Amino acid sequence: MRVFSSIQISKIITSILIYTFLILSFSSKSYGESPYSWYTFNIPPFGSVSERGIGYVLANAYIEAGLENNIFLVNAARWKNDMLDSQNTKFCSTGSWKLPGTSHRVYSDSIINTVDYGVAVRPELYKKLSDNGKKRIVSILDVIKSAKPSRHMLIMNGRPVFGEMGKIIEGIKQENGTNIRYMTASEGPVSMLRLANVSNRNVDSVLIFPEEFPIFEKTYPDHSLEYLMLSEGNSFAPIRASCPDTKQGRMIISKINKLLNEGLREKAFELFLDALPNIIEIREQARLNQNCINDNACKDPLVDSW
Image 1 (tube, rainbow, N blue to C red):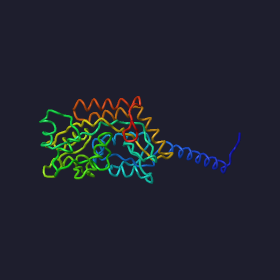
Image 2: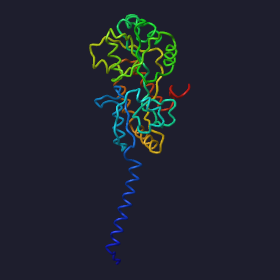
Image 3: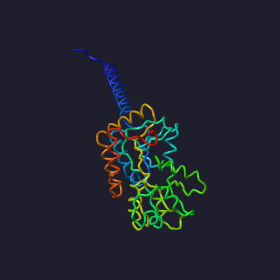
Image 4: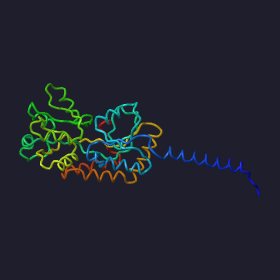
């Protein structure tokens, strides 16, 4: 039987400790904490100061899977600025659009395919556009051109408008005297809708996603605004997670894709569906948009050509 000296035993224990430390270090780098902060939109139902919303559900799922880090609530303008900054390698986004000019970032598979914009309008404009409530779908051209010269449409600064609707808005902006205004809203669309609800603030309409109007209605049940769908609203842009295009970033996105395929995508979509207004056309469009994730049939209007 071999007998070890105390010095030999000490060396063996030291070697085991070093080996164990190396194994744990490797595991931490591969599967442990994320080196990046998590961004989520300060736009209900995706995120809010109360730390609730789809973005927080996603972030918490990522964290439970071992991708642990702080969550930061950001507005659309900061999100866009940071996404386009190739030098900013400090954050991942829980879910965001894929922007042109962001080859320095890596994106997950689609999580949710959004329903396109609609518009909230003041009572006078609603009566005019809807023919006293007979129509629920109108053209964005009519919304903009039917407003009085002294009043305007609000659009959230930093948030892209897709497809045909985006082209129409860009064209109108080139005209003299355009009545489109952009707003960096502290509370997202709720801030813009609150302004429109005040008759003397010279706002006739607000471009919003349909899931945002019920949030406003719950907060301000006595409001006077009406929601209309837009005939040009047939585009959507998939929401994806995003990280810097680094070895660690690609590992995180790979892990998120696995989570999505294991049920996280369905959970996020159910939350999104619950947030939509109870309008049958919008809910049907949401299901149709989400279905094309499964067979990869849907193109992204922000980065893909049709």
